[in-house]
Structures are given as C-alpha cells and as structure tokens.
Image 1 (tube, rainbow, N blue to C red):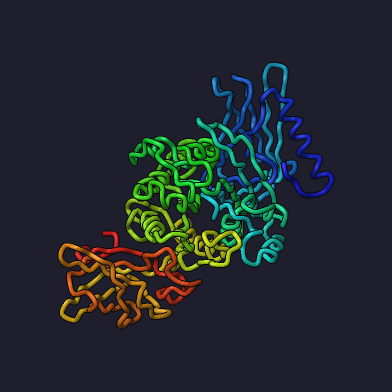
Image 2 (cartoon, rainbow, N blue to C red):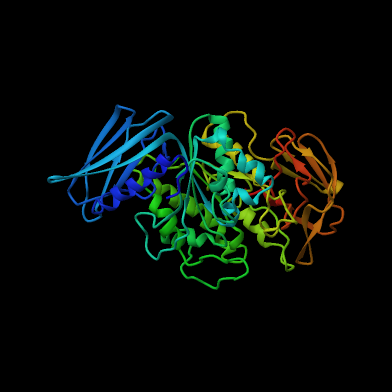
Length: 517
C-alpha cells in the first residue's frame, strides 16, 4: 500500500492491513481503500467484499461523529461475498466507511477513511495509455502541478494475466492516493497514466468536484487480450492465430487481461471509460477491429451495468483516442489508417449508430519523430487529454454548443464537366495550409484502380474543392489523411477554426456521397 502523509498517516494502513488479515477472510474488495472516490448521484456506489458465509455485515458511512447511512446484508455462499448499494450522494467529502461482520459471538471490523464522492473514470489500453507523466512534454512542470488537485484521486492496477475471470484484483501497483510528483511519475510505463491523469485534471477544472481515476493498461497488447470470450465470439474471433512480434510485445492470449484487470472491477459504479489502444492490432486481426472494438464497448457496458446492480449506466460514456502517427520501419502504410477508420466502426466519426454515446480524440497531428520512447509514443499527452475531455463534456455531461470534433464532409459532389470534386462540411472548416497530397482519389481504368493525390483547388468556410483532372478514368473513391504520418505536428491542412480540432481521416466511395454511409 502506497501512502503519503504524516507519521500518523503511515500507521493507519498497517492497522487496516492487520484488521483485514486477522479477519479470517473478512475484508473489503481490494480496491476499496483509503482516499478512494466513489461514484456520486444519481447512481449509488457499490461497496462489497468477502466474509464468512451467512454472516451479517453492516456497512456504515459516516462523517466525523455523524452517521450518514447504514446498510445491512449477509455474506453469500459459495462466493463468500457481500455487497451493498449506498444511497446516492452529492459530490464532496471526506467520509469514513466501516464494514462490520457479525458471526455468532465474534465481530470483525474494517475501516477506510478520507473517501470522496464524485465521478469515477476507468482508463485502459496499451502503452500510450500506460505512459506516465514523467514521460511527457513539460514533465517537471506537470509533476509539480498537484496542489490544486487533491480531490483528483488515482489508482493503478498491477499488470496481471489470468486464464479465468477473477472476482477481485490480484494486486494494485498504486492504492488510491492523492496525486504527488512521486506517484504521477514513478517511472516509465508504470504509474500514473499521463492521459488518465490529465483527462481527470481537465474534468476537475470544469466540474469542480472530486474525480476518481483508475488506470488499468498494459503496453504492447492487442484488443483480444482485453476482450471477453463472448465479445470475441460475436466477431468470429475463435482461434489465437499468429502473433506478429513487432507490434505485439505484451500479453496476447485472448481475454487474459479482461479476466485479471477489468472483470474484477465490474461491481464498481463508474461514470465512464477512456481507452487508448490499437497499435498492436495494426498487423493482427486488423480487418476485424471494426467489430472487435464496438463489441468490447458493448460487452464492458453490459458487464459493468450488471455487476454494479444497475448503478453504472447501461450505455455509459466511452471515450477513446484515435491512433496518432509513427515512422514505420517498413514500407507498409495502410495499417494505421485502417485501424483509425475501424476505430469508428467505419463511420469516420462518433457517436454513430454502432457506437452510441462514444467520443473520440483525433491525434494523427500530434506526431513526435524525436520521442526518446520511439515515434509510436508521442509525448504530447496534454493535447490528447484536452481533446478527450471536450468529448466527455459534450457526450458524458451534455454540455451544449461545445465543439468537440473536427469537421467531416456531409456531401461530396462529383463535378465531372469541370474536373472537380466539391466537399461540403457539416461545420466550419479552416484550411490551415494547402496540401497537394493529403487528399487522394481512386482512379480506375481498364478494370484497374490506383490512388492518386489530388490538389486542393479552392475553399470557403464550409467547402473544399479538389482538382481531379489528373484522373483520366473513373473516380471511384476519395480519402483524406490516409497515411501513417499524415502531417507534421499540428500542421494538418484542415481544422475547425475556433477549436484547433483536426478534421479526422476518412474514406468515401463517390457513389455513396457521404463518408461511412
């Protein structure tokens, strides 16, 4: 258990540990601990743990000398677990929580203190989610910026795999803690997740009430490791298949991280999830990602809703980062663009009908060719988190008139007699610079098609016109930013004029008119 504070504060966890171990198995679940954040109203927070079968358990929430509420339950066999749902609480604190088991003549008590109520977000994925604050731009300044954020509490799950679904976490690297420079930058790819922390910090700046952040991520892992057998079966992923060692460097066995690092959290009442993963599927089941990712979201939503006794929303908000850029070592240039597209279930933007109540941070313009951790690990996680939090404010918190995504075309007109393609965007678009290669058309003749770059001809506040005279055949499709490295840092051609949000990549068949439809 990692604890900061006075000498007195250091004694408390030792007593609590003794309490738990002396209790013949009576204890809170592993992540219910000092300094935690529980989900605020309108949901009720779930409190659970282990005990002696049939014993009575009384859970008391109190503040100072005042008892706020009591809940009574019994330990169920054969799981030896007990569970209560607290009444919905307004944001704030601190509170104390006590659980007492009464079994015959013996009473055993366990306590946790300094609990806050607020919004709880789970952060998961692979190495770009795992990168710590120590690894990002302006790390020294970010590590020292904690004094104003003591109500943003952090927890980091240990790296564990399991062949079967675990009921509780096997271990945590960082118990619930207040943020410090030490636990935000403990090392490289350890704890605390920079994207997770910065996302929570931006949310706190907006909401001004406690935020709980749980990081559960592992570098070099494909989506299959984070998916249940149910969701993989739904997408026809039945066998392990060959694992490309260049992009999959972490656990790759199906469901092993779902079993050990996600399923044990299912009883927790959550506000939402953010996710940064996909690099390891560039050459592994890539063509199934447009199914496996939406299926993971749906399965996590079902599992957390059921596990929390219906307290976590059935369609809780799910945000994710669209893959950034990197310098490939081979000539293959289609892996990243396809994963980016599949991350949206081939719609180009979210939310959409296959991915309701989701939000996305576009990151293809946040490239970092000089990253000491490799270009696949860009260090600007501040902008990633900022873009994510805009999506959360709009989708999770219902903030109106907030621009949270870049412009995408709503109409594509083929003006053959003029040799032009006219794109009309559904919101304003700013042409930051003209680029003659970032738009490409599929030009077909003699039953063969080839992608050709087409220059931007003219543009206005909501339209871009492309010169397609280089194609002497039939124009079959159009795509934008369809490369691993579409532009230099924050220098893509198209952005929203007031929000610095880049236009996302897309591919569209001319007969379809609109990307993804």
